[in-house]
Figure 1 (cartoon, rainbow, N blue to C red):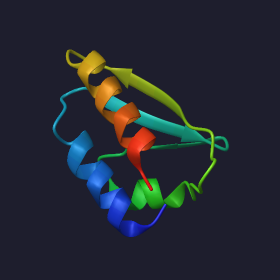
Figure 2: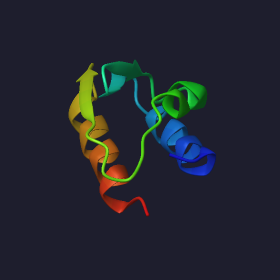
Figure 3: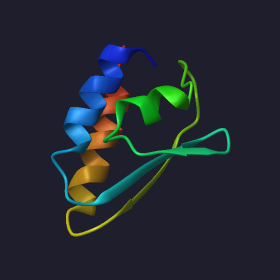
Figure 4: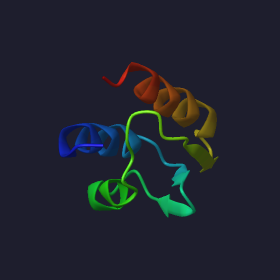
Length: 72
């Protein structure tokens, strides 16, 4: 994942109070932190697991899944 989509993901994730974690390749990243996301080394076709906990977790899940569904 390049810096621009990582920044867009961080801006999106920061809208939610829930704790959000992206998991891929045995690593975890907080999508509210651009550097953390870039460190995952995500590429097109990467498998990502989401862990989301908190009061707005359903909304956060929908938003993050939609983000990845629409990334180019």
